Image (cartoon, rainbow, N blue to C red):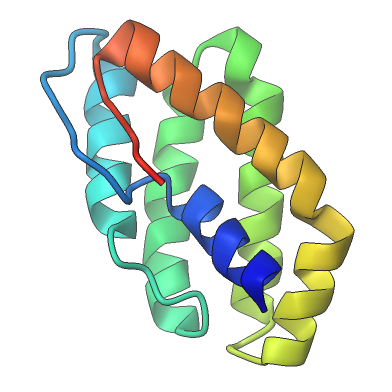
Length: 122
C-alpha cells in the first residue's frame, strides 16, 4: 500500500508549494496541472481523469527533454484511471511501473523547480 501512496504523490506532482512561474506556457500549464492534482485521491477515477486532462495539456507544451517523462506519467495516469479505484489493480500498477514513474516524476519536478520556479514537495 505504501508504494501506491508514494506513486500517487509522484503522479500528482502537486503536493507542494507553488511559487512564481517564469517559463512561458509550459510553466503556466504546469502550475494549473499541479493545482488540479493537489490532494488527488488515486482511488477516485473521476478525479484522476480531471488530473489526466491537465497532464495532457502540460505534456504538449513540455520541453523536448521531458516529453518521454511526461509520456510515462500519462501512461501511468491512464492505467490508474482504468483501475477505477480497485486497490489490487493500483497496487499491481505500482509494482510494475513504480520505478519508472518515480524517475519520470523526479525529472519533471527538478525541471519545474529549476526552470519554472515551481517547488514540489512530497
